[in-house]
Length: 435
Ligand code: UGA
Image (cartoon, rainbow, N blue to C red; front, side):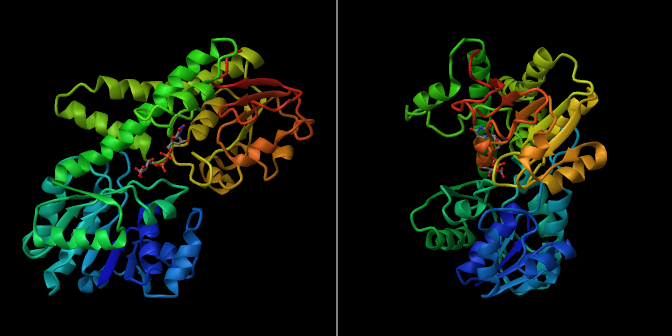
């Protein structure tokens, strides 16, 4: 069995590496020639724990990395993991996925194989039926369900645990018609993940499951952030004790109750906006989803307010932002709340220094010479009027009186309560802890 994976981002490259490491014959395809070169030499184009290790194991087995789409012609399964970024109106941009399936269609037209095309990309309900399937049938001149299979196969991996999640998913979703291709796909996944539950449904439900998943996670985060803001105004109240306790109720669950500066990253904000846009288009007023989104956007203003209430005007104040990655253990700054915060602070003419264990290079790509960067936390804090912890890197828990000694004003705003139990000679504000 030969497997192609198209699009070598977090989802595609993780899948490629895990499948190849298990000895499958895999072709990883991406249009970016430079990226392919890097991957071929065993270097991941972004930081993701365990990814390079897995990739290198794969490269020693039967893995090909290429920008040549024609190689899908011999494949039995073709996974599409092209990005679906956001347009300015909140809707998703389908150009990359359309390009990918157009190329697949052209190759299918000349191929003798009857492969299964599995779409992993996050797409709005109806996209498979109304966009992807017609392109594939038109370009290949073949019929889906008869001459090739088409299955919606949404992905649930998280960045920073992409390899673990690819190896041990919590569920497999297969959306499409009940054909021989569906049977084949089910058997493939049952062998790959023997004890994982498989949901077999139609395309539109599979597409919606992905949005349901991400919007529920976003809802949990906005819920706990709203409670965190309430706690902040109850002297002595602590959001972490509350989250830990309600998380013990199995109806609630412990995960995604970590209050902070709001959810960021390339998925939750984008998927929330796309779902809201879709609901509006089909005549449903998504009141709850709108509130979740609004709560998330407001969280950053709460942080700026704490700064202004303590420092007065922010013009010319030196502020050290600790953490620009959208979460720990990644170098990804896409849609990171820290990046949004820096933009706001720059508008207020503050002087910004940034430290992040992995994301300085990507932060430089956003701000260039407009802000300062330091590889050392202590140096980044030098002469600063305020330090703000944005990302929950465990390294920030090691901050102590020595590291903050050279701050001009020892003001610390801790969005993740990492230092809540430390005795620091500083003015300390933590989101979710009442003063
Ligand atoms: C998210 C989903 O968790 C994945 O299941 C999904 O596959 C992925 O999007 C996707 O659609 O591709 P990811 O973007 O990697 O994964 O990030 P998350 O771990 O969900 O975190 C998103 C944001 O929420 C981060 O800014 C994080 O700091 C924040 N967050 C998360 C909190 O503030 N509190 C929490 O308790 C959890």
